[in-house]
Structures are given as C-alpha cells and as structure tokens.
Length: 434
Image 1 (cartoon, rainbow, N blue to C red):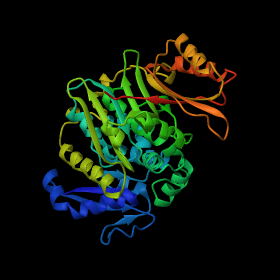
Image 2: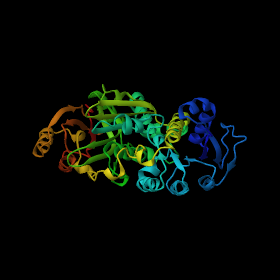
Image 3: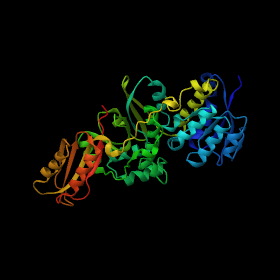
Image 4: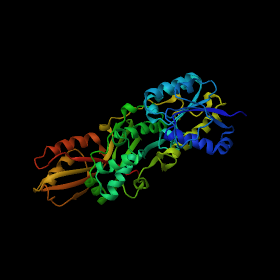
C-alpha cells in the first residue's frame, strides 16, 4: 500500500521533533499505522539545525502545503490564531486531514473548524494541544468513554509549575524565578499566557468539552494568574499541610460547569501536589473509574512530537473509515452536545485560604469570625502568627469549608472594611481532590 503523504507547516521545536521522530521511527510507525508515513513537503522560513531535511521539498509558503494535491495530511505547527486558522480551514476545504498542536486555535476556533471538517468528511486531530506528551485527550475521549465524568483537575502549564516549585523549595520570589524561567527557555519574553493562566485556560477549555460534551467556550473560562503569590503564602500553605499549584479545574454540577484556572491549595499528600518542575499532570474523576492520574512532560520537542505522530497514526488508521463512524472530535456526537451552561466564578464552590494582616489589638479575631459566621462560612482551621517586626501587624491565616464564592466575596469586602484590618485580604482557593 502506498505511503500516506504528510506536509509539515513549521519546523520549530515541535515541528523539528515531529520530523525527526517520523524519520527515526519510520518502520515502527508504519507497522502501527498499517502504511508508511512520508513527509512530502515542509513549510519553513528558518532552517532547524537539529533536522536533516536534505531531499525533502520545502517552501516558505504554508498555504502551498494546504493546496498541494500530493499531500493527504497537513500538520499545523506554526501556532497563533490568525494564519493558523486560515491554513487549517484551507486544508480542510481542499479535503485534507489536519493534525495540530495549537491549543489556542482549538480553544478559540475549534467549533468552527470541527463543523467544517464534518462537512468535508475529514479528521482534525489535536492530542498534542494539551499536556504535551501525555495522551490525556485520547484517555478521556476513548479510554474513559463508559464514564460520566465528574471533574477534571490539572497542572497543565509547566512554566507556572516550575516557578511555584522553586518558590516552595528554595524560598525564592516570583520575579526571581520568572527571570530564570525565561533564561532557561521555559517562559517567553512576554510570559503573560503562562503566568496569567491563559495557556492553561486554553487547554482546560478543550478538556472540559471532551469530558462533558459541551461546545468549546474559552471566553467563559475564569483565569487568575500567579503573579501576586508571595513566598509567605507558599510557606503558610506548607505549614498547614498544603502545596500551592496553578490548577485548572472543570467540574460538572447540577447548576452548570465550573471552568476555572487559579492558584490552588492542594493537600500535600495528594499525588498531584507532588508534581514538580516543568512536569504536567491531569486528574480525571469518573463515576465508574474513580480518580485516575496522567503524568508526564507537558512540553518539549520530542514529548509533544510523540503526541503529534500518534495523531498521524490515528488519522492514517481512520482515513478509509466511514466519516460517520469515526471517533467524534469532542468525544460526543456533534448533534448530542450539551447546552449545560458555564458557571460564573461567583457561582462556583470551593474551600478557601484567607490571609489577613491585622493590627495587634484585642477582639480582631472575634470580629473576623463573626463576619464569616454571618455569611454561613465555616472555619476549618486558624493559624495566627507572631507580630511582624517590620510593620507591627499580625498575620491571621484561615481555612474555610466549601462555600459558594459570592459569599467569600461578600465576607472579604466586610473584612477589608474593618478598622483593624490593613491592606487587601489574600484569598486562594482550596481543592482536596478526593
């Protein structure tokens, strides 16, 4: 059987890794796919010194790949929203299957892309868009298809996890570790997508759609970054038996779907709390399977290339199948997607860590407890530290039971209005992931 011909758009880190894996493991990949997979053309502007592409036709025009009649599958690895969207839609219009690692593209334009792919009877595969080399999309979409998924929680941005790990283990400041992350290439010169949770929200949007059978709705995801976290809060969390992680949480409730990314206290004895450095992990809780944990490299040349090539193998296997009988893009049949709403963050429920800076006056704790009690917020534990020498204030750290966020918002507003409370109240959500 003649080989399937592939066009790779972009020969950067992931594109280079994909080309190298396809060349190095060609025989093994052909055995798995049932046919050879041949790179017929590469769109590249800057040569990658790690790739020996001599003999492979190249072009500087990515759209030449989308219109090349010899190519069966277009691999989009250029990133971004605009050119990538146009490229993918043009490839689909020309009857080509698509493999992409572009989480932003799928999260924002996936509904449009999948609709066009269904119209043309082609496949769009995107395993590498979430958690690099971890096959979590396939696991939820296929391996856990018997389950009603209750929740998904993940450390899905390696840069943020590296920063929090260094802050906890070495007592370093956020700014100090961020500078190192940029020097090491973990963070971009503009790290906003990583440290403000946007990258993680792209990935969580995709996971939630596959887990719960809802359309992609990135614009409704709540995102909160890690830029305001201090080593003091990291240390207080540790003293209470918790670790702070930048967590993405998607949970199905009777009222709607929680879709949120934010710093989160997790009990230190949970496996996911011990995922450190640039590694990623995703927990999935199903009604039949219980909780499962998927761990591995969330980025990097060959881990991400592993997922790209796995998608290529899947596409090759499915190319001759009836489009109506293929695995749906978002796990559920397109006409069976749910309209269950995404909840605003004020309607989400969590436990909370609160840090209050108070004057060293009698009765402050009683006032704090009264404000929380009046709003139906139960305190799980309190830790009061000694007076700080530099400002004469007393740090008070509280952990609450689970409560709807709007109540915490009201309580914080009342706490900050107290005469003896100085500065803003620090609030970090707590998830036990039982």
